[in-house]
Length: 560
Image 1: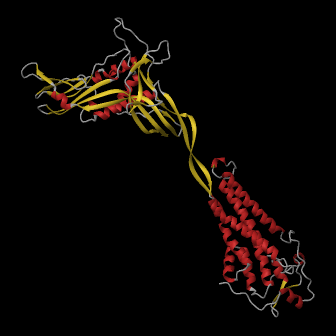
Image 2: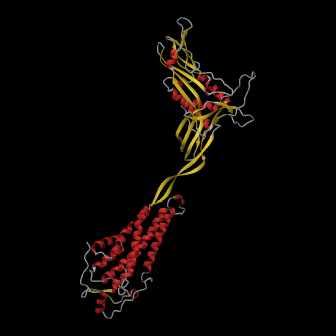
Image 3: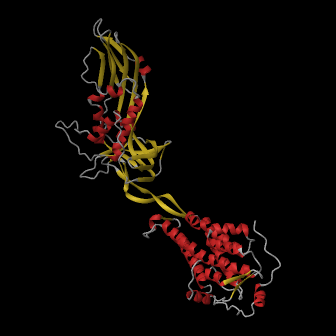
């Protein structure tokens, strides 16, 4: 605990004058001179300027990207340099104030001479300041000791003010795109044959490839362009296809028609599904049994001004699957499935891309109105005919939704793909010849047919979105940038330290008595003093600091 002050002392001024009447009264230096308080005042103002510069930098960089800092030295390094300089400037005036308060302390009464060392240690650093707090009764110099200790936290507190945080910055980017389409029209022309009864339309190789990719699960990434991270707000309606599959095993087997061409010959069965697709099976004990067949209905072009939705189905497919029990080859686990492929509308919302990944937050499937025929709005010498649909929801047209189109000629070409040999194939397990296995490898066995045909429909949809009729949805680029966030509450500590330093300096200057020499931390002043043990006084014949320095310049000494 701090020691109590000694009592029963006399004023040092009156006592010293009585004991040494020849001593000349000390003449105070000018406050703003170098020998006075000029350097301390200058350092105090310097620390204020440095703190103001730090605050100005904080105000300038608050909530701004770190990239806006163009100075060659980093922001943290500049703050560190300025806080170090500010701390040094504060401590210059604080150290001088503690040193001068030492002389004021001894001028007000008889003190233990050891306190001279305590004041000096307190003016030098934190360790001496801690000792000072616990050994000397608190006085004005105590503020200086506290400042000396707390100023160690000045730089860390200033560093804590700056927080670097990552935020996503969204900027429009014409290079951020993905496709959607409102029509499927290759701008084909009519090609009449010699008999003028049919029209030859080559299938779309891109669509054929999409069908195979979907069935074989070679799902490719939907086309998009994004240099980094992108997003597309809003929704986009696009033309596509959907598949609807139904298990019709019970109905089909109930109405099957079986016969033999001759006794003990193979049993031949004809099966017609509810969708009107015809299937046929073959079975002969110990020889073989049909385990897979796929077939489609024959769909004609159906041209005319009043074409209903029932005529715009792309294809109706039926798949027969069974297991042949060896060695008798009797059929079991029979399954018959009807699937319909038809146009549909999809709404893609809030697309996101990051690197090589691309996804939609939601994909909604919408019904289409009954098909209607009309012009395709095709650019060319003449506009072909198209089926047209409106996007429907709960039986009503969606407001501001686009009109979706598929040209007659492209629909015919697409239907031809589903009437190819791959979609009209059969596999007989046993000793039978199977020249056309078709898609048994991807649709046979226990494959989920609904999922398989839906994969095919989605692959076809992606092709339309990314194909020649695709339009570009332009989005925003998302960049993660480092922003400077200023946490002002951490600046309270440095400001209080600064104000305390100014407060101490001002009080020390104002409280310094005229008859107390302005010696501060001078070691020469201590050497110039004499200790009068009889009267318990410290006397100096020369009290002017200039005279003490001049005398020291003209003196040479050696330590004995």
